[in-house]
Length: 294
Image (cartoon, rainbow, N blue to C red; front, side, top):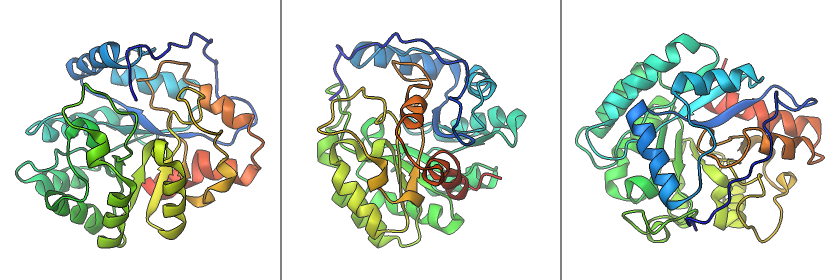
């Protein structure tokens, strides 16, 4: 659970991607317009951890790319209705100067009027998927209002990246993530929408084993590693990525909204003793296939 006493880790930044790793795609990088980014940072300051990196969207892209990250998947989410279309236009404009190096995802607010139309416009504009955050947007993934969004993603063969895990939760959210988020809800959606590509960040966090087993049974489920490899959140046991389906795990950093160096998880991966093929899948190939990165 998120609390105001989570630590800020002051270990130094690395100058580049650790040597010996294959080309790195960071599949979980957050960007927002300046004013909204400021509000996000203030929320974390009050209710979670101190964000280490306070940058504009272009500074985020330049920072990671200059340090050897080969490609970025940029994410955003609408905090209320009637803002998604503007955010999607922002994402398209910000990614344009970084064509071939940054892939942008759309957002939409579940339940708002014309949600599927907003999403279709974003896909037609070149965005490669959609990001939703159940904790922030306070919706039930398996609710009927989600059906048009899920159908639009499936129809366009675009992935849905959704924070559907129960943790990290916070009393500052408007809803209880443990009520609206459970692995069974994800399973219900995977079964109701065969062919829908769905990615759950943080490996599902407090339901790690359940998500790992669900991924073994569903070809259309991916998990990303965001923040779970950093030895930041208390876990019952260390994560062994060799126990996971190798073609369905993606590396993501959660940059810039992290309380430790940008390369902390990359260093953990470099030291994990994984074979070259598994590392290449996690750091590169799986994201290329999911998001259509050239």
